[in-house]
Length: 342
Image 1 (tube, rainbow, N blue to C red):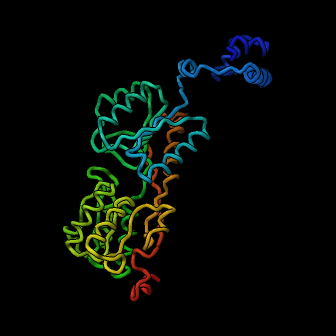
Image 2: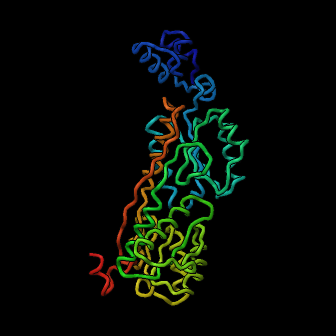
């Protein structure tokens, strides 16, 4: 493997010219640039990325922290971010925080040490320590918040319109004639949970339906919490349930079996998020489809724009729309309800 001196010799240019081409640190004519690139390929030269990042103050890497990469929601989000980052010449470093503040802080410290150019992350519940905010500011590392907003944290945000998603799902059940509509919330102290609960309550108000506190049960976005919430909720005899995500819907189905109830004949279901394999469910789940890949791509593009000419501009918020996928679990195919959905 050749070095920078071999490249300079093969291209018949100075070492300074090779460095300028490799680091894009100074203008070099197109003809000389082409010769340098041909020589790099000829001698098999691999630029020292650490030295290059020190010279340019850019590592061309982006850190990304999600709560749980095993959650089916996040691989698509990460893929969208990776595609957008790669198209712009950036690499993505991925970490899972497990919604743990200490683990999140460890990864943020690591990203600063690795000289990432910016960070996309779904914030764990709780405030970010001032020490971390100061360290990121000193390093000049901009943040983009993904899916969850954080009061008091100055950063760009890319999120779903969670309130509208829940409002649409609950309104659909109300149109079908259901009255006792339960709600299984997500993780406490995060904005997605709060906004979806707001949408649920707003839909009930719009239809002059009372909000029964007994029909609102807490989950944490995990399968087991959906099961536990289902066991509690079904004691209060809802005729339909809106569930904050797909994984909790899997757990809720287990609770239905425990009570020997059927969906949608006894309890109708609408859930947030959609996946290709949901057509394999029996009954097939009615969902509010969240644009996961678009969410990740929008976050990466926003961060890359921030790294360019807009470092000093005010933080921005992008809010993406969802779409309803109507299938059997909502009860729309049941006799007496099919006409209502038309």
